[in-house]
Length: 283
Image (tube, rainbow, N blue to C red; front, side, top):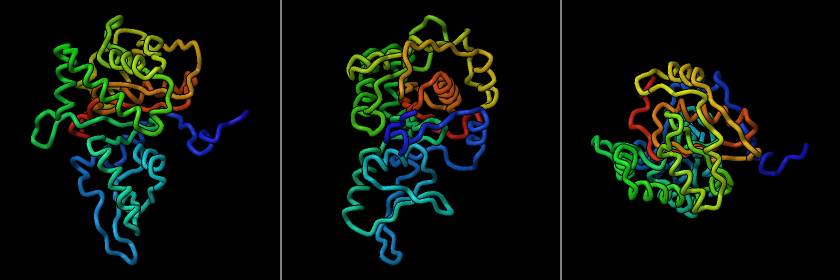
């Protein structure tokens, strides 16, 4: 079997129930956001000939994008991951990266990469700008808000390593059979504007999905297994961008990504509009 150079340097990962539970139970942060909890991730450091460092709690998601965009590889330490800088040019490149992804929430889960475009609420408990757009689009069916969200998603895809190379997009299925949800509408606009293939219609819940909001992480997974999912692809895409509106516990995104990989898709890149404020939701 022949493998591409990309597959060798960035191999596909398998998602399993055991891996998801193990990752969920780790006592490590589940998000990195330069705009809030990691404002001071990049700072001056006086240590031998090191002048600046980037410190982050994990390398999932952020490590692959950082490496592809800057060539910098995060280094594991006792307390997480870091990248030490000796030269001003390195610092300027890292600062540029931090500013570009300031609002992005890098997520720690089992997808090949998983991010949200913004947090849902700020530290004062108010909706962020994107959080308000998501609220208006989802709960008030505001088409202007939906288009603004889709265009933000498209801008991210077109300017972000790995995502911009994907030729397929897929939404999380609607919980109500036959109903078009917000992620499906976003995926449709992405396909139209980016010239990629939307496979959302080939991925559906096998039965009516129950509400998961009040369930624990494990209860959610069991409920999804009970619901089941049907995937009927005419071809086997190598990589897919999986779209959802709100990342809360990450259960649904990881479950659907697992099933997509079981169907033969090698890489699944998660992209949600907003991330819930608390990592402890559905613990």
